[in-house]
Structure formats: C-alpha cells, structure tokens
Image 1 (cartoon, one colour):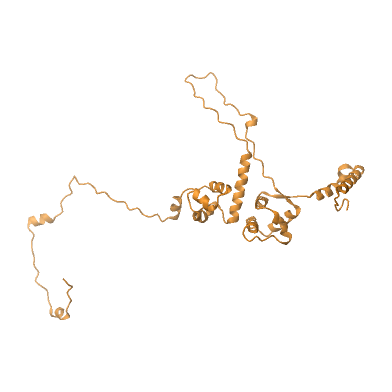
Image 2: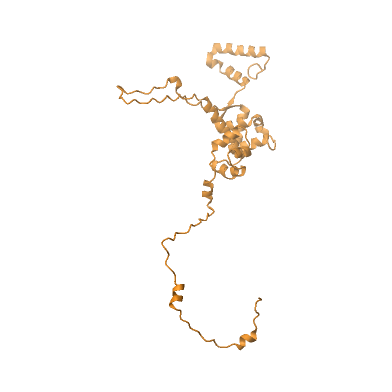
Length: 279
C-alpha cells in the first residue's frame, strides 16, 4: 500500500469536529488491564555490566608492565640494541623512547650512553666487593629451656664486607686536560658526549685546533673523564725536568749538583735531548 498524497481542496472543505464517543469499561475489562502484583517467585534478572574504556592516561600507564631501569641497562651493557631490549622486557621500542626514557630521565642518545657507562662502572665496583658471610643454618629450638643463652657467631674480620674501591680519575696528557677544561667552559657534559659520539659514529668530524688532542680519547674515556674526574699526567721529559729543577731542594747544594750531573750523563747515554737538562 502506497503513501497517500494530501490534497489541499479536501483539507479546505473539511470544517468542524466529529462527534465524541464515550465508552465505559466493564469491571472485567478494567481488571484485565490493571497491573498485577509481582509474585514472590520472581527473581531479579541477570544484568550485563558494560565495560567502559579507561580514558585516564595515568591509570592506563599504571596498567602497563613495570619495567626497571636496571634491567634495561643490563641488557644494553650485554650488547642488546634498543629494539632487542624492548622485546625482551615485553614492551616496544616506541614505548621505551616515548614513556620510559622520560620517566628514567634519559633525554637523548648521549644521556643514554652516560647512563650505560655509569651502570657499567657500578657493576665493576660490585664485582670487586668481597661477598658476605654465608647464612648460618637455622637451629630448631628444643622444648627444654637451655641453661645459658646461645650467642650468634660473629663473622671473622676477613669475612666482613669491605668498602667499595673509589673510582679513580682518568689520566690524561697535559694537552688533553687543557683541551677538556677549555670545552667545558662553553658546553655541558652531555653536549660534549653527544658531539664526541658524532666524531666516531655519525659525521666522523674531528675536534679542531686547540681541541685536537681530544680526538684520541675513546667514548669510555671521555664519559668517565667528564663524570668521574680527570687529572693531567706529566710526560717522562716533564718528570725529568721537575727532578732536575728540585735536585738542590731534595738533596742539598753539594749532592744536588751531583744528581743533576748524573741526569745529564744518563740522558746523553740514552741519546735523548731534553730542553733544560742537556739541550
């Protein structure tokens, strides 16, 4: 059956209202449509709880697998790449770089190299520590009261844990030390590490001019020098000049002259010309 099409002339010709018809329901009809009481045997229908998607980013992050910074650094020290380490930790490389690195304070590649070097240094220090005493076997108490209390055995002095050996400063030549002090005046340590890594990996550019002595430093030496300290080590020629100049202060006037003469003879025999001694 199609939809009827209204005609305006029919609507205009119609006027007034139709007759109103009234009807009274019988008691039987009225009882049939009235609501009935709920029987006692009725039980509440089983509902279905709709799972609402969690949109709170903090709660979503809390549901993520907990990854420890130490576990990641351990894998990186053993040679795993970021992608391989992420797979072993049950996450993705993108999650590491966008969420976990920020939580661990790793800002860029140079900062990651620094963290790996620090962790490697900490591992070395832990390996140098003497392991503690073995736990003693637990002794079951008897029902009878002992005559005297049993004192626990004290560990022998040789078995006591010693303190970790402090990290020694990196030894550099005088030229390297001067160049590193100069670049530290204008750059932060993480910026220096990033630039130094570029000289080896990316652009293979070199430190130039007065900073040229830094080109022979490895990444490990550069990182340890920046974060654990460094000191300038004198060359053999510089040590000879120092001994030559301090001879009288150490041995007196008469013996100092003999000491200087001996140094001059020794350098001549070895065929070395040292300015200030025999040249």
